[in-house]
View 1 (tube, rainbow, N blue to C red):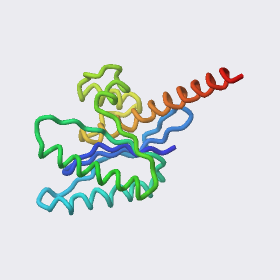
View 2 (view 1 turned 120 degrees about the vertical axis):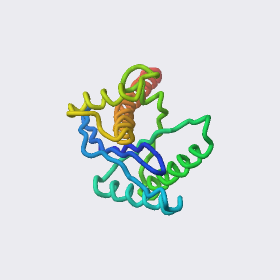
View 3 (view 1 turned 90 degrees about the vertical axis):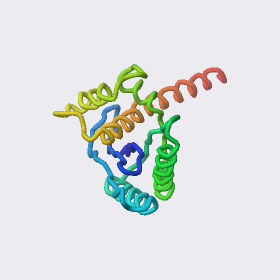
Length: 174
């Protein structure tokens, strides 16, 4: 299974590609999609959309995981990130891919076991997990890797809890 992890943004959108097979993860690619701040927002969103579609096709992505961002101070930032998330969702829909959303708290807990972990702690866990020489840069790329990794771990939990529930249901009917 190939998972595309996305850290949404308008100026910088982080992405990662993780292969998740038999409980093992392999980091295939990561980076950022940069847009020109001098361009209109619709042009910048088009760039994000086109780059995501190229990544999806190149890596034959099976699922997309994206950060569900909560802001409470800057309405302009909320709107811009919301537009970026909309483009990510459109890209998933156009490619018939399921999309999974995780809050920063969920990502931090999945990687560090602590919901108030600092950004550098999450980055260090990404580095350690994939035995990288350094934490992926910029932060948006490291965040995208963390989001995809969170999804890998969550898939395992979802799968095991669904199977456990299914088996319990079968036993109760016997």
